[in-house]
Image (cartoon, rainbow, N blue to C red):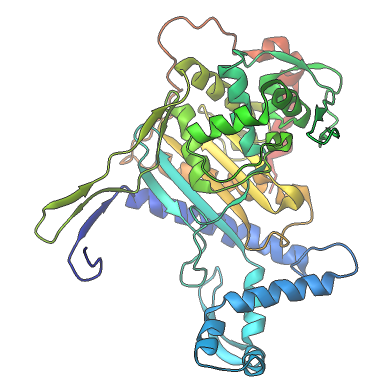
Length: 456
């Protein structure tokens, strides 16, 4: 066995230093300059801030969270190991001391109690970013959190958070691959019910009343994150089939085989999500994201080489159909602010995600060369924005993707293409331009332009 600290090992990573810097800068720009100040303002003057609970036992719930945070802290562990009594430990956490704390404008030297510092840190939204080379699975940028000096937790691989609507593309993949549907396949936009094992029925609601009762294309449904069409698809293909597909695409976290997974109830890691999404960019081949290419000893002898694992999951046409479906999210759906706020005109396949109570905001963005995922949320799920306009994935996570990719595209050294996705060879007898069946959507897209220009 080697000692990683003393044996002079040379570890070659896949990280691109320029792209890593751009990802960190994007997090700093959005979280530090925009989102976190908005969060502080959002909660100013509210009792029990920043926690959100309903009912009469709010104080008890907050106390429970704070007590758990105390017991997970390094200070608590050291005091316990030193043999201090529970009373002495409690007193220590309520005694003001000098300390250095995190802020987006640099570390701050201050005096506060350790308990107050825990409450202070609960206010901070965290972000994680992972960006992989679409062709070989090499991880080019990796941001696990705001600042490891103060937040020693990796939100890329360690954290499992509810993924929301970012899970829906995998359900639509079943329709493209197993059902041989096309993006322009039409489904009545009505409420669907799925019978559960106990005889009751699961009937999800929609957040929008748009186009109720009309026939809508799958491309429109995914672009607008329509829950009714997801219920239609999970009823058609089954939760078990969806889980089986997710496993092939590198998602290993536990998933309950219930219809609600169609709406994104599973808790997954950003690492899993980016790897799975990259399957679409790589013509249906899943590549396990890779961080290290090789390890050498101090004399330059190669100890280990790492070759990305590849698994063919989808045929090329199904993968391309999914890319076309997800382009609709950016062209006219929940990711449209990439066009009108950030000025992107190149082909982008994407998916936003917002979870229950706005606890998590996601954005997955795919280009021919890079697949990049972003998650934003607080350490505790009870800490979140109270409004969907501020807490949705399009507002919390998408801007980080946009800022990061702007820097990547503007760097001539990186040579990242703005071209369209490569079509499979041969004639594809599939209609992708669903707007010709849906003139109303084309009109709506034009009308949305001004709406999103000034969006925060």
